[in-house]
Length: 240
Image (cartoon, rainbow, N blue to C red; front, side, top):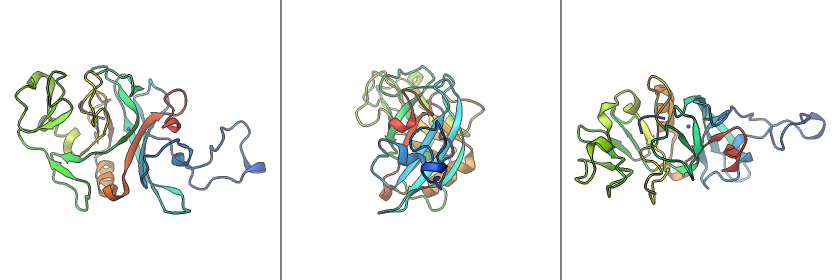
């Protein structure tokens, strides 16, 4: 999918409990967002992509790191984000071609880009070439896989020619949605990438400078994950 995760800015110094708590605020509302989540992927780096509602096409991407035993989650950076043109959908039931960004918690298998990897990148980085494709053909054995050259059983009309999106795919991270054991029809080619001209076809996007900063920050040894969700409701980011 050509394009597009977000989170509300979290408060790094939580208020004291008791007299300083805000009446009516949800439990733990003053704690950093990762500390309010059910799961952060088990590593010490996390990206959150949060939208206000499932109908939102914009939100915030924030990247966090944990300071170690007895430490806390701290914000390392944030940026405005864009989501699918039709908002967000539960990743467990989402359907391909709906223009929605899948919610859930995912790993980040590898990075790629039309541009050379920014200096300091530690994540595996694949350079996009003239014959680099993402196969989205449900009938292909290469479904939801980087294909170079395009697999013989993957129809070009059902694949994304990556080099054709010079702005969006200048830099990107693969989001591990439907990646390890692909379910046909669930969706393919969901990335965190550079902003295009508007909402995405189902990815998460951020400004180019933010994408470069994210690539320099992400450290595979710290098992970074990305959580995509809404502020509340059934797809609330704190559920993941």
